[in-house]
Amino acid sequence: MYLIPQILLLLQVVLATSPTKGYAPGAVNCPGGSLTRAATGINTQEENYITNRNPITKSALGTFLSNAGLTDFNVAAFLGEASPSIGLAFSGGGYRAMLTGAGELAALDSRTGSKDKTLAGILQASSYIAGLSGGSWLVGSVASNNYLSIDQILGNGNLWNINSILDYYGINIISDGLMWTEIAEQVNDKSKAGFETSITDPWGRALSYQLLSNFNDKGDAVLWSDITTNSAFTSFQMPFPILIADGRVAGTSIVSSNSTVFELTPYEVGSWDPTLKSFVQTKYMGTALDGGKPTGKCYNGYDNAGFFMGTSSSLFNEALLSLSSSGLPSFLTKLISSIANSDADVADYKPNPFYKSTNQDTTISKASVLNLVDGGEDGQNIPILPLLNRNVDVIFAHDNSDNINNWPDGSSLINTYERQFTSQGQNIAFPYVPGQSTFRNLNLTSKPVFFGCDAQNLTSLTENIYDVPLVVYLPNRPFTYWSNTSTYKLDYSNAARNAMIQNGYEISTRKNGTLDSEWAACIGCAIIRREQERLGQTQSAQCQQCFKNYCWDGTIYQGPDLGDNYSDNGLTKSATYYNSNNVAGFSDGGTDLFK
Ligand SMILES: *[C@@H]1O[C@H](CO)[C@@H](O)[C@H](O)[C@H]1NC(C)=O
Ligand SMILES: *[C@@H]1O[C@H](CO)[C@@H](O)[C@H](O)[C@H]1NC(C)=O
Ligand SMILES: *[C@@H]1O[C@H](CO)[C@@H](O)[C@H](O)[C@H]1NC(C)=O
Ligand SMILES: *[C@@H]1O[C@H](CO)[C@@H](O)[C@H](O)[C@H]1NC(C)=O
Ligand SMILES: *[C@@H]1O[C@H](CO)[C@@H](O)[C@H](O)[C@H]1NC(C)=O
Ligand SMILES: *[C@@H]1O[C@H](CO)[C@@H](O)[C@H](O)[C@H]1NC(C)=O
Image (cartoon, rainbow, N blue to C red; front, side, top):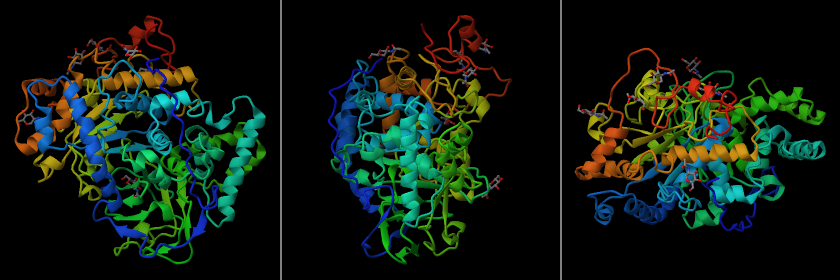
């Protein structure tokens, strides 16, 4: 294990702010004024947060760039006139995505107790961190737990015990029964307080037994808006966290061109998309609104953090439904069947806070209930849109999707790229990416790849070419562990959990920099690129070489599929090679590659 447990940080005692001190929302005084706003710009509180965080990210970036081994580059002079902004995106994919993502996050974190420091400090230099579905479990639990490092989470003992979520206490039927009794009571309390519940309520509560297990009653009163009171937030130490869910009319399916992509931040929930273009204050969700004005009492406590993570990952409600056949306590089966509607993957938000929130009539603003589903259901499995809407200079796109054999094939980037040519994407620009066949056969999923390397090549996409971020694409690959475990694998031993995390770490660091001694420098070149272009600065010879190695140069592959090949660099040794060399665990995912 690469992680050296750090001094165990004593968790600050966070006072839960749900007015009922439990899962149910409670009435509060209305703050006055409209609780919604049109999506005309960044929320002012968020803007204030970023303004205050800027000196921190800049200083961390200075340290990273100074240690990155950049040649012919003056860090101080550059940062005197430029301020590159970094956004991190963690894809969905169940625990595979959460754990691989955790290793990728640890690689960027200067607090990680590893000898390897290849990319350490990029987390500290980042402005935003976005998570979707399995990625929302990672981002949500890190942010809610006052920005603990991955080391601290694993060293804590309470958190991230990924024994089957359906059977949390292992074989201890009595404790499991208690867990589900508690959950049933909590969900019932919300319902008795007059709020509609959906299967996402027990799902979010069950998730909290792993993700928020540090808090009293497993976080039943912990809110997403509570993050703004965490000490790591009030001191601007953490990247601003954003979760993603999709708006969908019940009973229909969505693709990237007709989804409404919702962002769930500690301040606001809403969408920039033409089908909504408004935001509501996170803390006051649950309040019945008409055109943003309360029609009765105001409520707090609706934005339960587990409920939000459950919303972003509502696809897994199907897993909960499978419980009915697994011989669990009958009250649970009853609870689930009483609230399960035909659309099991939907989280119901009622009252719909966006009721008449915009002047234009949209399907969402006319409805009495807001239906949110898993953020990956529209195929944009990496949460990139919120980062495009914030004009960051570089996006680290961590792709732990399951496109082929539980490996990614670029589909998520392709969907985001294509969206810009539809009416839903009219305000965004995203760099060119090739199709899946090129991703697979030109080794674009076997090592990190940069997209949008030359802003000058983006003129046919937008006039504001420098606002289009450079994308550092980091696809899931096996280095030390078969990390293509099934999305629906809900059960990991601590050893398997840690091995997944370590493999994620190797993906980000290119095996501790051993595959490329200039990897840190190349990442540095990617981070500074847009600002250099804005300032008309030319790249060093070193950065030009890095871009030769890592940028997609526009080549398209047109040939037969070459199949999977897993070597350190890309295509060389086939899956057959590993199997014939008796590396166990290949087909079920898991087990170390190197014995
Ligand atoms: C990377 O470094 C860590 C120690 O910092 C070590 O545990 C791990 O095995 C290394 N991985 C590789 C692939 O060298
Ligand atoms: C979105 O588009 C897909 C594919 O064209 C279609 O099947 C689906 O019905 C559409 N959904 C909505 C809500 O318009
Ligand atoms: C993992 O990948 C290999 C090679 O693509 C494949 O044969 C195997 O079935 C995959 N395992 C899972 C659990 O998808
Ligand atoms: C950008 O355009 C130049 C000139 O057409 C071309 O040589 C280069 O490969 C392009 N770069 C990318 C990343 O597409
Ligand atoms: C893909 O990787 C293999 C092995 O590293 C290499 O031989 C091949 O040339 C690569 N293909 C491309 C297009 O870079
Ligand atoms: C793997 O890579 C080698 C060398 O690049 C190539 O000859 C072979 O066709 C590839 N595919 C498989 C499935 O082994």
